[in-house]
Length: 284
Image 1 (cartoon, rainbow, N blue to C red):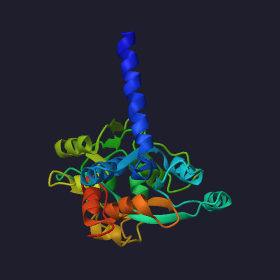
Image 2: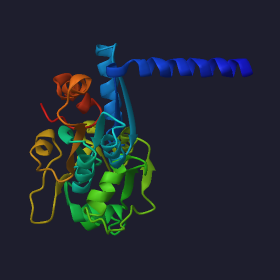
Image 3: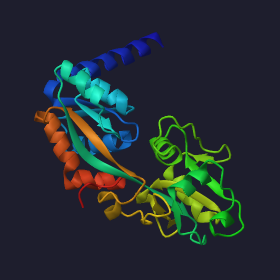
């Protein structure tokens, strides 16, 4: 067992040495947990196309990614928010010039069973549903049925975004939480399947998961605003209320391998991956 463990250690060290030896043929990408699956999908396809390059992708959060860029411990930071002024100031002090690149859009669809007569909701109504203030579909013009709440689990970036943007209305002082009876599911597909089989259910996920087995609900910012369908065009033109841009940040304009990877992410092939991974492309 000792010999076997030593052999594994030696192989690991050899692999790390080989990685270190790649030099300019390797880059580190860190940041947004919302984007980590997208980043990894980009990296996998990129390395299939360019086997001589190595792309390492890790999460940790947008703040972690931006801090790593500022400290020069990564080449690209993934972020589901804009960089803050204080982060830019700190970066500039360290000789780093953060360069923002919009790489994708994140649009979340709210879905119900096709048998549900409710077709539209305001953000306030959505918040009321998921915080437990609204408990029956009849309160929203539907049948006299108790609402079954479906959410992504708490470690999901989608869960966090929905909580901050819908439940807390982007108010950093708000303490609103999902009502405890909400069912926390491990994947968007699990939510899609449950909504398809439960006429009382409501859930949310990336628009790529919408099918004929679920009915997307039109969303309005308030009762006086237009109700907007969750379709790609409405996310791109910023009309759909539950959407946001996703960014890549580099130190100055991308160069070398960083530019090669960014160009791939923004290419048709890269934007097709955006769609497959449940986000919205910035380019059709």
